[in-house]
Amino acid sequence: IFYDCSAESPKGRRSVCYDREALEARKEHKPANNAIDMATAMGVEILTEAQYRELQQLGQFDLKTSSWVKTPADIRKRGGAVFCDRRYDTVFLYHNGADSYYAARGFRGALRV
Image: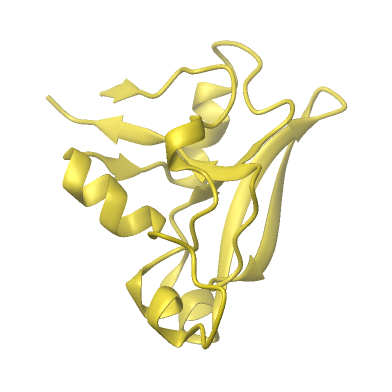
């Protein structure tokens, strides 16, 4: 397994909501894309929380950005999604509406070979 090890969530993959359902649910100010579809098009999967924490053992990533991570189905069914970042030398898991998007939030990929 290869993980995306860029220092910050890559610029070309930021300002995206979580998935297509979230993108289609937005009435206005829609982002250009969503994390799940972008990852699929790239041939990767977005990291799980466990993979994200494993990645953080290799270095310090997302000190200024955050990354969507695979969201459990029960959270997603309720309209939510989860993301992680690293602040204060600690990895945090947060929640947000899946349709939200921010300039500093993107996603990281895992490639299985």
